[in-house]
Amino acid sequence: MKSHRECLTFNIPKRMDFLNITPQVEAAVKKSGIQEGLVLVNAMHITASVFINDDEPGLHNDYDAWLEKLAPHKPVAQYQHNRTGEDNGDAHLKRQVMGREVVVAITNGRLDFGPWEQIFYGEFDGGRRKRVLIKIIGE
View 1: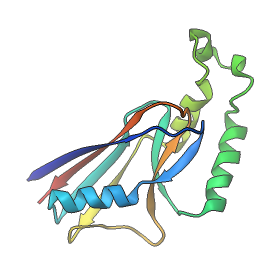
View 2 (view 1 turned 30 degrees about the horizontal axis):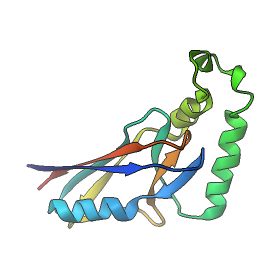
View 3 (view 1 turned 180 degrees about the vertical axis):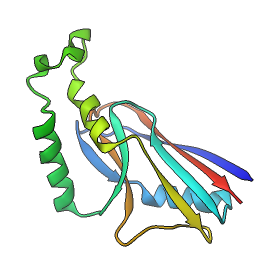
């Protein structure tokens, strides 16, 4: 069995945003040379997410509105976590809802997706550098 590891780095200027990272994951799979296996893609920060869904702007706007209703950023005093001097209690909750990672099968050297599936990085506390791990294993 072979393995391949890469890290992507992002510094998203907006507090919350979604970025399609499928092309970067596909490039890593190609670079790995693995034809049959699995790829793990995970956000290495507790205020960011990796998830799979459709690349449709209306859906991304719906996520933005829904997450802000679920865990609004303001007032920041509503979160006990923010008593530590942070202002990102909401970002931790948003990450919990959207998830930490995805695993995708690799078949014939390609991501084995269903219709419309794409991999996204979700940022919930932007304005600083964050990483996403890509770990590929297989033959």
